[in-house]
Amino acid sequence: MENKISIGDLHILLVEPSNAQRRIIIEEMNSIGIINIDEASNGEEALESMERYTPDLVVSAMYFKDMTGSNIINAMRVSEDLKDIPFMLISSETDEHYLEPLRQAGVIAILPKPFERLALKKAVYATIDYISPQQLELSDIDVEDLRVLVVDDSLMARKHIIRILTLMGIEKVFEAKDGVEAVEYLKDNMYDLIVTDYNMPEMDGRALIEYVRNQSAQPDIPILMVTSETSETRLASIQQSGVSAICDKPFETSTVREMIQRIMSH
Image (cartoon, rainbow, N blue to C red; front, side, top):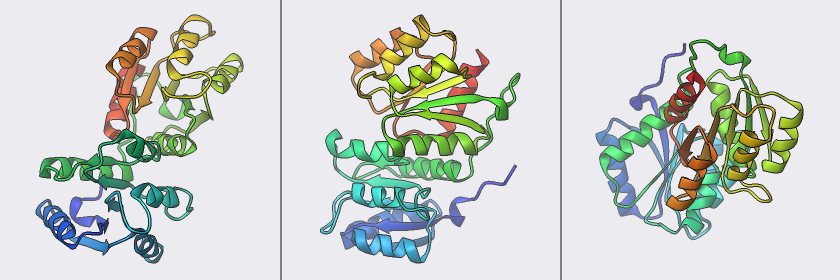
């Protein structure tokens, strides 16, 4: 297995409009061992910098004069050269209306302003695991033979999850754009694991789980839900529908790996 890179090896692009905030964040990064840091003060400058030299991680604020953090990550995700670069948001924004697009785009972490050093360090280690994840290991199943169906109405979210599953060693990954399409696939194909979002049009994740458990030909298949849903009532109803595990967006690669190992062992 390939050795993991260290914190000191990481090359960071920090995108922050405030000189004072950049100095504070750089000091915090230096304190945990990050020394290779490029700076940009707006979105256009950041994207131009990435075209010249590809960073290992982009750490960005939310708002700039020319665009938002959402615009930056969306531009990265549609670029063949930039689409797999991890993205971390550091912002005082708390409105889910503005944060949800970043969650769907596969943001590695969302930190508040001000943030705790421990939270930054945890997010950086999550970045390292995203860049070079540990292989998935299952006691009685060959990982390369696993057939996994990923269900999410967000193309970027699907691609983000599929990339992580592939880097873990799972080779047979299939995708459906919503619950309705997933049901059609389930009628004609057998899978070993379903990874699904909750909020989807026409047929949401809970309805999909209920179909699998009560009407499909494979009612015992493990189901991992990856969702940004925060409503305790809705999450409780998902639990009652028969989901095997629930993972938050954004998520750490290690968390997904451990959940899959646990639910597949059952």
